[in-house]
Length: 123
Image (cartoon, rainbow, N blue to C red):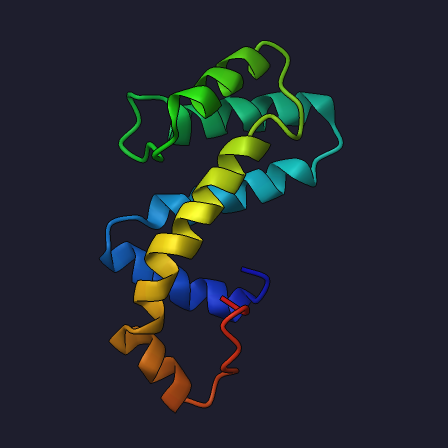
């Protein structure tokens, strides 16, 4: 997730699995954590909630009820870390579920043939 090139290829793979929202959520959380202006944090937190946490969103990520309830409480006074537990849960999901499939996919094999770095920690 640290390599922009690796993220791009992994994101394209997630799109084929209809789970691109997981990476988009993770990236939105990273952007939120980098924000210092509280007004911007409030707005970004609201958008992340509407886009990825709300059960009404077509891009809703899969979160357990404990994490979802924690977010609902934290949204009363959002901070740059409102979604930390959810972000970890989604990262873990991608790491355990999507990423192993990515490593055995034609997309990844094509990446290796092009001579991209082979470190499995780069995506």
